[in-house]
Length: 196
Image (cartoon, rainbow, N blue to C red; front, side, top):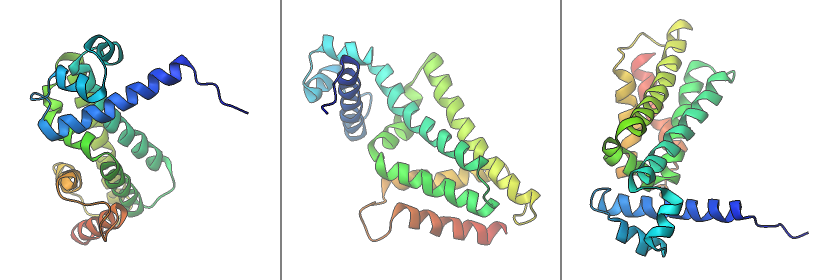
């Protein structure tokens, strides 16, 4: 039986392609240094057709940033309700984050370097999503403290942990000898030695 491709399917496929190619260009050249003409050339669409899919260059940046942080919030929310010990929970969160960064390196490069270029509600939404993700990490650490397996840590530790994990997009080669999950386990082992 042949699947019928709808107009919506084609639109979504083209939009996903535009997001992927735009993330590559923004990661390579920077958001501000990438013009709409370069985007049009790269995706092989005229400006009018490109705007039909993205609305504006800032809307494109917003989609690139929000999609990944939303994916991580969904992952964190899912593991938070699972029956994990505190250390296993933190390990699952770290593995999920490093896998996502490895699979979406360009998008995370754009996020970390350019999300502050967002304005108004878009900026507020991405900031709020980032804060929500950090709160899941704090909750996981607090769960370990309540269970008596982790010692109390300062609020800023979450930023330190996420800094350690997030900036792997700059140097980690996911096709190398160590998988993203193995690297996450290594990082978490070091962390647990310090806060058990």
